[in-house]
Image (cartoon, rainbow, N blue to C red; front, side, top):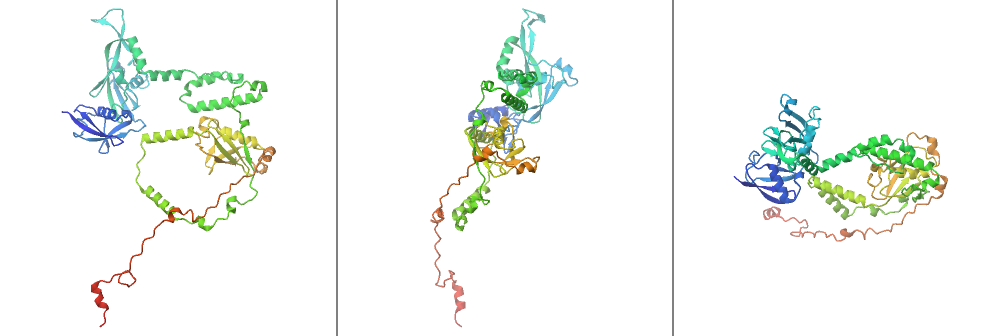
Length: 510
C-alpha cells in the first residue's frame, strides 16, 4: 500500500515523497534531493535525531506512514566498511571453505573500483581473478559456432534483494547504496551479453574514463626543461624515476624543486654575463626597492612622550553599551557550521588571499634599525631571507625571522607552502622580528649589524601627527541620554512612602 513521507531540507524547505513498502531509503533520499535540487551524495536522512540506515526498505526501517525525515549534511570523511564478496564456482574453489574474499574498504568507493580492488590480488591473497574483463565465445549446443567471436560476460552483483548489472549501476558508491558503516555481503555472478568484448571495452573506457586517465597521468614522467645545466642532467635518471609518484608525494616534489632551483642559481652565478642574459628568469630580487629606517635617538618610545588627558582614557556610556552587546552575543547559543558553510568560508578566504597583489614587510633588526620591502604573491620565505642577508655585515651567521609575538617562524624555504601571502596568510603590511640563532657567539652579536653602505642610506621614522579631538564632542550617544523623571512625593512627607489608613491612628495624641 502506497504512502508518503515528508523530508525537510537544511534550509527548512519541505517536500513529499511517495513510497511503497519495498522502496529503499536510498531512493527516498535521491527523490528528495532531486526535488530540493541538491546533490544526494552529500546528505543523509535522520528521523527524531537518529540516523537512518539507507540500505533498509521502508517496510523494514520501522518508519510510520507520513513520517517526518530530516536532511542532514554527510561527513566528508568516508567510513570504513567490511565488504565480503561471494564468488561463483569455479573461482570460489580458490578460497575454501566459504568461497569468499573480504576486505575493509571506504564507503566512497564505487562498485567498479571495488571489483577492480578484489581482482587485483591485494584483497585475494595474491590470487588474480578476472571479474571485469571476461569474454566467452559464441556456442551452439556446447560446440563452438561462427568465427569464434568473444562476447562480454558482465558481472552481476546481488546485495540483499537488489541486483546491479549495468555500468551505470557500477558507478554508484557503497554510501549511495546506503552502506555507511558495519559490513555488507555482495554475491557475484556472471551473465552473458549480446555485446562483443571489444565494444564492451569501449563502453568501459567511456563510463570509467576518469579512473583510466588518472592511471595514465601517474605513468607519464614529468618532462624536463631545456634550460637545465649539464651538471643537473647527469642526475636526470634518478629524477625521472622519482617523477612518476610526484602527484602522490608533493613533499618530495617540492624538495626536488628546491634543490634544482639552488643548483640553477649557483650555475648562473658562476657563468659569464653573456650566458646569464640567455636565461629567461623573472625579475631579480636585486631590483626590489628597500627603505631603511634608522634606530630611534631616544630610549623612550614616541607614544610615551605624548601628553594625553586622563579623560581620554575614561570609559563612556557607548563603551559600556558595546560591552553589553558583546556579552549578549557571547551568551547566545550558536550552531556549528555545516560542511557547506565551511567550504564557502574557505572559498571566500582563498578568494581574499588571491586578490592581494602586494604587501610591505618591515624587518626589525637587533640594533633597532629596520628595513621595509614590497613582496608579491609569488615571493616565499627564501626571498625575504635573501633580502635580509644583502644588508647584513656578517651574512653567514644563522638567524630566524619570526612573526609577532615570536611563535610563528618564517622558514627559509622556496616551496609553495612557504609563500608569504598564501602560505603564511599575510594580508597587510606586517612587522617581522629578527632573532639570532642560539649558535651565534656574543662577539658577532656585538658587531655592527648593517653594512656601511646600508646604514648610510637609513632615514628617520616619520611619526604622523594625530589631530587632537575633544572628549566631549566625541561623546555622541552619551549626550542625548535621557534621565528618568523623579517620582512625585506622596502626602508631602518627602520620603515617597504613603502611610496606610490603619496606621494613621497609632500616631495620634492620647
